[in-house]
Image 1 (cartoon, rainbow, N blue to C red):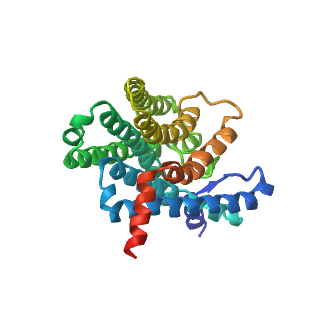
Image 2: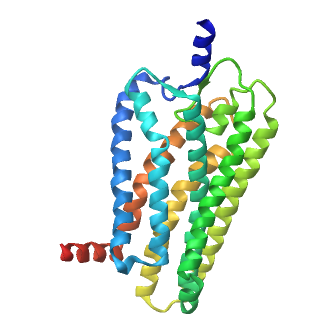
Image 3: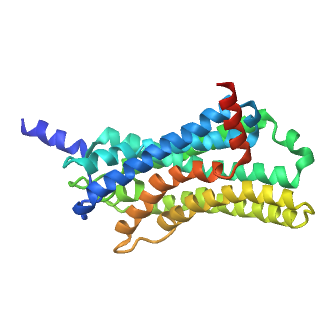
Length: 309
């Protein structure tokens, strides 16, 4: 009977989350629930509108739909579990549930890094090579770029997940985070994790720094092209679409760099929780607003959709 009980206990992790601030948990539950509902509604709106309106069947909105689907899946992989843990005293997650959560959070986050590069290349092609845009961004090539983004993210996650769960853990199963994340799980190890940390640093550089450099290079070329434009209207249109994308890039990459590309400190875990809360809850809810608030194409699509009703 005792062996069965121990086996049951060891098959679970305890997500510490925000237990250090119990007075904040109810307030966090309400705020996070609101942002989660905003994420669901806003991103579903973009996906459905892009599918229904033929005028939005362009590479830009194809990639934007992929980003919306990513954000939906990304938040759903961690936020419902967080809401359950904030609502009641039970803050456990099964071992298999933790493995699945780790895999999908890492896979979808890695995919978004690559997809944002693809979206910046689309904007670079549209601004800097407008006469060749239709040829360069052929639908088949766009689908290939999207599939490559998703595959690269999931392959990266599969490798990291295997390396993480191969590491032997100590007796306690208290994860000092609100979801199963590689750095937090590695802290439970009983062996030297230097090689795992170096692998995480290298792959984080590949999936964070290199995409960021490519994005900034693309926008450097775009800025140079915009400065040579004679049309004020053309400049405003470019700034509108590119500015929205740059805002989304900043909201995603800056928090990721703060967590994955900085050495851990004594108080870094609590800081990382709130940074992670920002890019898993706030950023996905803001993306639809950033892309649609001042977007004439989206407003036109909504009017056309209302006209058909």
